[in-house]
Structure formats: structure tokens, C-alpha cells
Amino acid sequence: MKKILILTGGGDCPGLNAVIRGIAKRARKEKDWEIYGSIEAFNGVLNEPQEIIKLTSRKTAGIHIKGGTILKTTNKDSPINFPVTQPDGTIKFEDRSDELIKKLKALHFDAIINIGGDGSQKISKVLFDKGVPIIGVPKTIDNDLSATDVTFGFQTAVQIATDSFDRLVTTAESHHRCMIMEVMGRDAGWIALHTAIAGGAEICLIPEIPYDIQKLAKRVSMRYKNGKGFCNIVIAEGSKPKNGTIVSQKGDKGSEHVRLGGVAYQLSQQLKDAGCKAEIRETVLGHTQRGGTPVAYDRILATLYGVKAFELALEKKFGQMVAFKNNEIVSVSLEKATQSYNVVNKNNYLVKAAKGMGISFGD
Ligand SMILES: Nc1ncnc2c1ncn2[C@@H]1O[C@H](COP(=O)(O)OP(=O)(O)O)[C@@H](O)[C@H]1O
Ligand SMILES: O=P(O)(O)OC[C@H]1O[C@](O)(COP(=O)(O)O)[C@@H](O)[C@@H]1O
Ligand SMILES: [Mg+2]
Image (cartoon, rainbow, N blue to C red; front, side, top):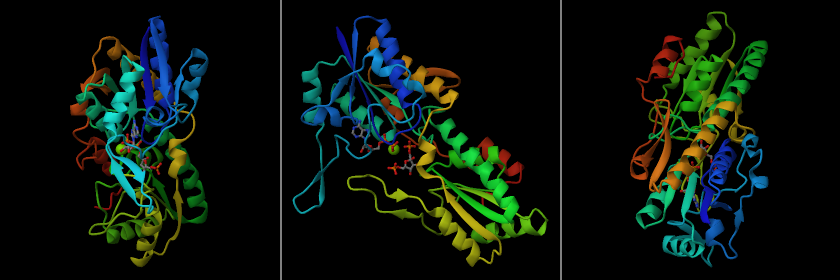
């Protein structure tokens, strides 16, 4: 029998379980493959005792409709940069890749499928270069991986954000209020941009386009002057004013990122300081965008990725990441997959159309 190991790394998002099921169902068709999952990314292999489970058909049945990941995940324990707490409480980072490779070899896996974002795929690349038969599946709710046109979880996040936006509109209208809704988007404003168009926002603020607060204050006032009497703003968590900084807190121990969240409150204060008279309320959607059942589109995309990832393993095409390009499921090298980010360009067709609809980006 041949053996395949599946793991999920980085932040979770709806669709991870559909990928796992896609891989497992396709592998079972081959009759001579056993399917395993490592619990909490590579920690399941590194930890003593190890936590590696056999993914029987009972374990994967029907999981495509479930959010999160049945294999659990971590966004801080990179085997290449592993955080180790020192006796004085400080954190030191250690490269545990050789230890991981030794342990993987002892387990005799014929293929490993690593489902995760940019950080995960950079780990995949390092392991592949050291001889590990690994294949990547892209995961990011922010849709910021450039080697693929779309990733699963993104449509679900946009749907959740749009549903929330619609609810805020009716209360904004009733109270003559200006609503600020903060969505995820660390470096890429795709969720905000799609939600602003789908919901019909007046203002859309994204990390890629720093905003001018005076222009925004004027735009909000205009909405009241021209009789509309309410205003709806979508802002991505990584947005910042021109000559200003993002709102962040220190990251969790061992995390590579600062924690974002709260930019809606900063914007609210800035609007007031700029003379905006409207009554403002702020809503931070946070992790609701990453939880719960994936929409049909994400289930399908995730399933296609799972099937393709196993087929790459079957063909021994390691060092590749599956991707969706020009309406086809393809694969790209891990090297190419980790080279650049997919951020919103000022001249992107969605930005142009949004501006054409009168949506302000504060630029
Ligand atoms: N397979 C993995 N094993 C252990 N830690 C991982 C793994 N994949 C990702 N991580 C951790 O999560 C971080 C973020 O990974 P990434 O895949 O980019 O997730 P996110 O999309 O949440 O940014 C990595 O830098 C690493 O610390
Ligand atoms: O769950 P955490 O660790 O707070 O991380 C939240 C971050 O993850 C993100 O959702 C990014 O996720 P993706 O890497 O899946 O795109 C950011 O938008 C957000 O800042
Ligand atoms: Mg990342």
C-alpha cells in the first residue's frame, strides 16, 4: 500500500474540509492508497507522541459542508522558524526542518499534501528542496496568492460580509446614521472591494489605496446634503490614511503577524475630527467571515483542488501547487507560487467599475 499525508496550516477558512474529502475520495478510487492526516499542521508529526490519524471514509464523509478543518491548524509553528519558549519566558525561533524530514521519512509517506497560505507554501518549498515529496493547495480568505485566480473561502467571506452589510443598511437608513463595517484584508482589499460593489457602499477603503480623511468627510456630508440621510462604508482591516499607520496590536506569541482589527474605530474618530456631523456606528465582522459552512462555489473549488492535488501525487509531480487559472485547474511550481502577492491594483477593472458607480476610495 502507498501512503499519503494531508495537513492544513495557517489560518482556517471555509472549504478546507472539502479539499480533504476531495483528496481522500479520489485516493480511495485507486484502491492501493492509505490516507492519513497530521493534526495541527506539522505539529502532528513533530510532537511526541505524534498525532497522525487514518482518514477512513467514515471520518471524511459529508465534511465538505463543515467549516474549519477536521485536522486542526496553527498559524505560528513553522517547522523552519519554530517558536520555543525559553526559561525566561522569551521566544527563540529554531529551524526544526531536518528533524521534521527525519520523522516524515520514518513514517514512509509517498506523498504529502500541504493545504495552506503563503506561509505554508513557503514551508512546502523548503521541504521540497530538501527532498520531501510535497504538493501545495492554496488557502487564503484574503485571496492574496498571485499564482491562482481565486481561492476557496473567499466567496463565502464575501457572502457573509455582504449579508452583514445589507443588515447595516436598513438600520443606517432608519437612524440617519453613517455605518462603518470593517472586514478582513491584511494587505489585500479584495473582500472589501467585492462587498462594497455587492452591497452598494458609498465608500470602500482598502490597504492598497491610502485614504484622504478630508475627502471622506466631504463625501459623507454630501450624502446628507443631497437628501440621502445615511451612509455606508466598508473598510478592510489593513487600511490606513495617507501619511498614517495601520491599527494593530502585538501578535500572539510566536506569530509572524501583528494582530489587526479596530481600524473602523480609528476611521470613526478621524471623521469626527475632520468635522463630520453624522452619527457614526462601527461594526467589526472579524472571524465570522472565516467560520461556518462554505458556499457552493467554495465547496466546488475546494473539491476540484483536492482531486487535482491527489492526481499530481499519483503522477509524482511534486514541488507543485494546484491553482485555478483562466477557468482551468492547473498546477504551478511552489517557487512561482510563493513569489508575489495578489493585491488590488488601482487600475483593476473592479476598482474602475466601483468608481464608475460613484464609490469613493478616499484617494
Ligand atoms: N504546515 C504548517 N506547520 C506548522 N505551521 C504552519 C504550517 N503552515 C503554516 N504554518 C504557520 O502559519 C503561518 C502562516 O501561514 P499561512 O499559510 O500563510 O497562513 P495565513 O494564510 O493564515 O497567513 C506560517 O508562517 C507558520 O508559522
Ligand atoms: O486568526 P488570526 O490569527 O487573528 O488571523 C487573522 C488574519 O487572518 C486573515 O484572515 C488572513 O487569512 P488568510 O491568510 O486566509 O488570507 C487576515 O485577514 C486576518 O488579519
Ligand atoms: Mg499568510
